[in-house]
Structures are given as structure tokens and as C-alpha cells.
Image 1 (tube, rainbow, N blue to C red):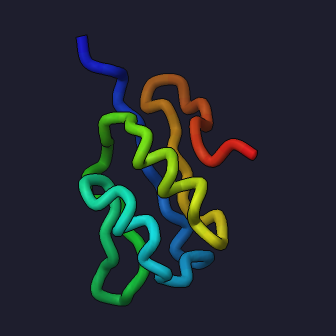
Image 2: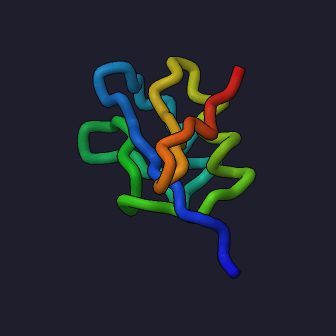
Image 3: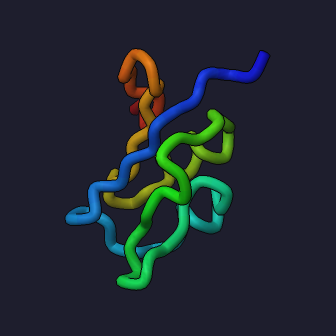
Length: 77
């Protein structure tokens, strides 16, 4: 059984386009044409790299939520 999917959101008003997220979790995050992060797909498979990407964001623009419950999974401080 595969893990429950997660929803990745990016607050594009906060994003500064550092690219750390896209380098850390390229299967889930990319830099858009404007240089800011965008989710690659509406939902993703939870992974350590995705959690790390959200926690590494220097401006806390990325959030990972459980797709069914909405529970915030990352970043957790």
C-alpha cells in the first residue's frame, strides 16, 4: 500500500526563487518562468526530500499538507 498523497503549496508572494527546493525535491518542485517555485503536480508522494525542501526554504514559502486531513506535515519547527 502506498502512502497517502500530500499537497504541496507555495506562497508565491513570499518565494524569493532561491532554488533550494527545486534542487532538493525536483520531482515535486520546480522554478517557474518567473523564477519562483511551483509544485510539479497537484499532489505528491510524501518523502524525506520533500519535507526537507519545505524546511530548507529560507522564507518559509513552501507547505506540505496531508491531502485528506489537511494536517500540516512540513515545515514543522
